Image (cartoon, rainbow, N blue to C red; front, side):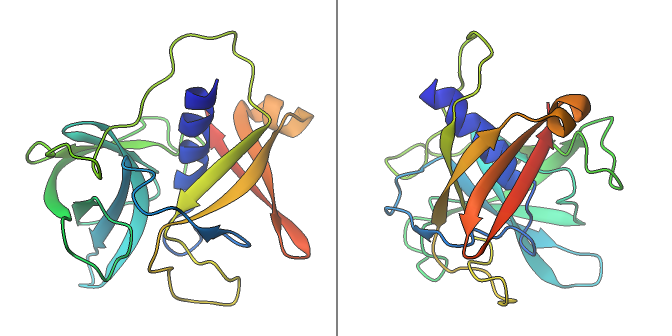
Length: 198
């Protein structure tokens, strides 16, 4: 169940790109406690660089959000503090495979697989996520979301360190109707809702 929780909330986190990926009200994750996390450097058409979060599925595949589109990508593996490049693997992304039914307007099926140009070197700081086996289909109640998104609603800058925040997965009519996972997390005086299609 815990592994299933990790996968679910990572997918939830992926629906929040570098601009909206807010780990509001969270705290710094223990360094390298999530060796499957990938910081994706997006090289845009206009020459700008921005970032998305992803996670390592295998030695050469990363999962991220389909709305995290770019002209090209570089996957940064083994990152905790963005300013510390020691031990970070930089691997160019060779191919992108967004979900065929992704809808940018409704943000459904917001999942994309990235094929790395070379295989990651596994270490204590770089490991693929453990995928869940078939379970009873029930959702865990409490999970943790991680990422390098904004950790303050008013900030336009991403966090330099991997952050995490606890969320509660919710089961309501809207989420069931759209076949999505929804979660709710404390964010100061308000709450945030995140969702992803199954």
